[in-house]
Image (cartoon, rainbow, N blue to C red; front, top):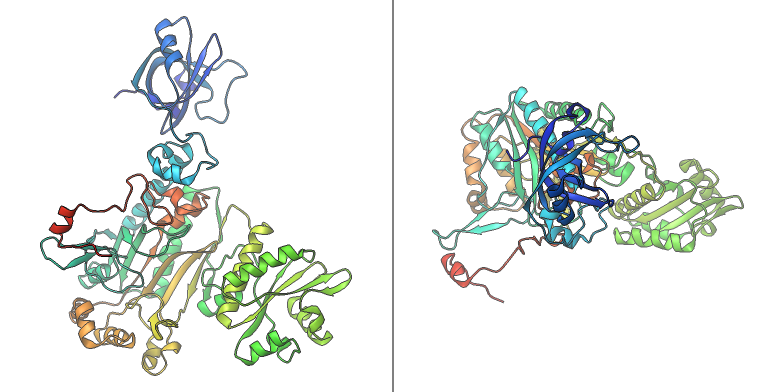
Length: 586
């Protein structure tokens, strides 16, 4: 080895020892008589002192610059009184250099390595990701990622699960997002698909009798990106045979309640996790991934203003819509500019407009105050339990638009008013999802989770007559406003699976072409089974207190799906296209 100790591991027990360090020059400080070098490796920093009395080492210390790769040999000694650095694990000691060897020089780096505030343009950070990854913050994130995944592997191993790898090139089947496809060179005109998830493969492992499977699975989906989404991502894929919903939920909840205090002891969780139906979550929070860390729940004013002279309310209700609000404490003083920002937020979420009521020292004010009767204002005050200083933000529209608008407002007030404790991870279960949702663009029913989710047994007779009333045996794990995991009890009966495909508008020929392998497998003694797939990137993002998942992935893509370091995606050479039997057209 070119070093005998890691920089960040030096401590007072090493005093008097000769050590060899190797790493990058983080900071160089020339104090005239002495030169101080902060040497960095993955474990942290160590201070090296170059003294003029050691001529060769001192002369090299005069030449080196930031990010040079150095090897230093010297004796560990206590730092002088008053110079101890309590912020470093090695802050009590320093190394008096006897020899300094330049293992490799460095050009001036295009991004600062010590920028822990992420002030550097992200485009530059991703282009020079190998430099960005030298930053202690990202190294800490990736080391935490390693610990989290190792904990999960050890936990599931002890619970009797087998880790089994599944193929990365399979057949394209509709599972909710667009596939990335790979052309076959040896079979012209045919394509593999990269897996959106190992969904069908893990179910086939249950048919094969493996009973308890898991995989740290790489998944690819060609979908629009955002801060908590990447085209390729990692999930903890779990499948179990002979289980019911509570068995799956119990396993994952126990895993997480052990994981969080073991890996991030500064984080708090609430246990047991609350469980809420999809309908209740939409009614109280306007979303199926609510942030449980604060209240500000949605309140229904529909009956209170059903016969109002305010046409926005009465006409909306008559057309089958609803009128709901959230209460923002202490916000009665909001200016017209503040309210315009909130109105635009509601509109961008899909709702038509925002009405307000403010409980001021001078009485009721706001855009809706003059057009509502005193009786209506009194009913609203009773429903909202309003106090002086409160602001009611009211949305009247179709139920779905009301939910989206008020959910967006709720999160806006969360951040504006700083309503949540930063150390809390508020997990919760959402259950009893509808089996199908109506696709207005395609004018047809589509699955809410995926087509292998089992409908509730008592709803099987509604598959053809009333698909909108069919409930599924699906469940999601949410945390702090993010969906962290999605799972379900699966279909294991061939006839039920075929009916689901038919209800999605597929004819028998399409069903056989796309899913014949699954239907045939179910004819050979498929056991009842279910599973779940926590998204590791989002979970690690929350445990690391990062704003997006790019900060916890070694080599992420941009929001447009580009890989700036490799300049990907890129064009193929004409020769390569011919080998793949492809032709690019306008």
